[in-house]
Length: 336
Image (cartoon, rainbow, N blue to C red; front, side, top):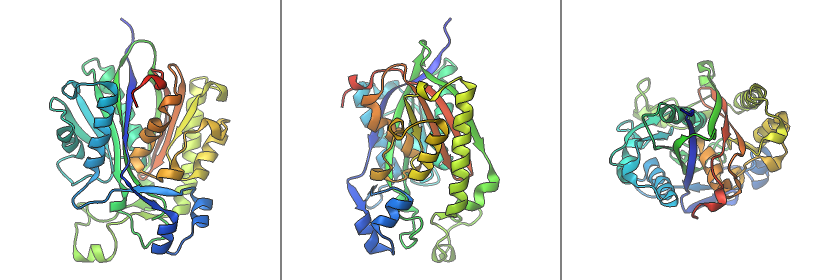
């Protein structure tokens, strides 16, 4: 019997209509287009508007896009995993809501919380379900409504984040394509540098927690930047060495879209030019768990069967890692 690997067989995505550009942002907070572009590399970001619209709205649209492009029956899906740090509510899970909205009546569903590494960790989790042989179709969706937890009076963090969702379908593969290897890490000692203090069981919502702005992202930029540069690059290089991959063997680096300087530093350590990096941070910003699938969504038509991809991410926790992945189909053959 041939080994079963977990391959991605389709990609879907969704971005809200409203675009917040740097000019509008500079009228909301003390910043400039030049400052944002120089330090982060973001020109625009998409924002989900509308009363009562949460992350599940975007995630469901990404899943519907995926199902349509791959001609997949919603009732054939065994499992859906949603990577997010901005769930619609504490419970039920956002994945549960998405399954209902997208018609996945036979799937079980759960959320995964690993901040900006959520989709990366979700890839390994989805792969394990496929590799077990018991599950044939697993959807992984990464989605975040970061605008719901951003303080738009904090000039250091508000330019960074945007809203969006991306989804992929995992299926069994016997040709050696799919997830080949992974290196995943967590370090709770980094929690103090990137977190949202209130809203959980430690600090439930009160008038004081709202007034203190504890329901917004708190980020110590320098500490996070330093840890992200070293850990993303170190893990990606270790993964390459472990699998005897040279820079010429890699078609694309699929990096988390947090900061252009972090992407450049990781690529440089791997010996890759910017042309070998999937980049959309300039248009979407940091969509947290949605960055990696939205990269695939944008670059799908340029991918060929057998292409070697390295995914790399770093996020709050701290969490970080890298995955070596062999692409399973010619992207230009998929429906638009």
